Amino acid sequence: MRIAVTGLTGFIGRHVISELSRYQVDVVALVRDTEKVNSASHGAEILKLDLKNPPDNAFDLLGRPDALIHLAWGGLPNYRSLHHFEQELPMQYHFLSRLIRAGLPALVVCGTCLEYGMQSGQLTEEMESRPNTPYGYAKDALRRQLEYLRATQTFALTWARLFYLYGEGQAENSLWPQLNLSVRRGDKAFNMSGGEQLRDYLHVADMAKNIVMLALNKADIGITNICSGKPISVRNLVEGWIKENGWKINLNLGYYAYPDYEPMAFWGDRRKLDRFLNDIMDRQ
Image (cartoon, rainbow, N blue to C red; front, side):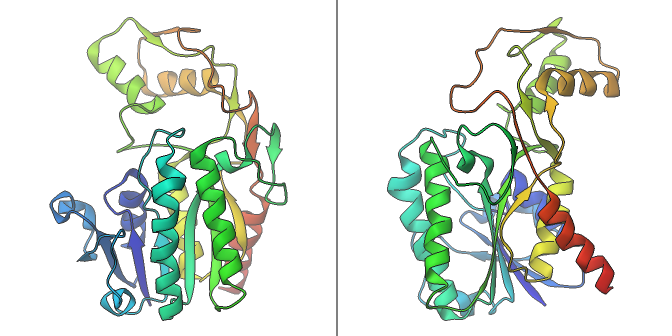
């Protein structure tokens, strides 16, 4: 089996490639800048290719893979930038549709929980998407475009809707790296929001396991939440990290305002994902 991956050098991509290295599969990773690859490749074949201007024979250059794990997306973490639907959306669809028309059998694309918008509580895949940011809108629009494409092209599609992730290699402005940095600096207090918002956090290594299983089995299950399924307050999450690592630092709660583009309490329903994973285990 041959798996192609975009977004290798990003936070998620490095963990997905690492997880793929545990299986007897050929892996090819598309990168724009080969200088950023180094040890992150985990033995994957590296193909230099710019998604903005892919060659007509891109699918053949990839070695005609059995599935593509599509992680690449520019313009983050600025969720409000118009770049997401003015530039990223048409470029992404052009690239993916070209591969599909050339014969790509299966596609796993990473979406975002921001596609749900301001809906509160437990979020299920059956709920209507109501994005309220350019990023969430662009992701949801790409999903719809790919679903329309299925009317004329045969391919398996799983839209992996990611919730909040944490772990090694995360962007410096994310919660976990900021806390680590504050501890290393010897700060007496860590500045954060009030921390009462409920969120759904999943370690990036667990996310990678889920994504890889979807790709290896050429899943065709549409929208699928990739999450823990367990709500936790941001304050409890941070306090748990501090206790787990034996750190000595106080929390300066209320320093930052709560984000105005998310509800105070939302988390994912992962029963659909668990059913799929359980079915795989039953067949083995």
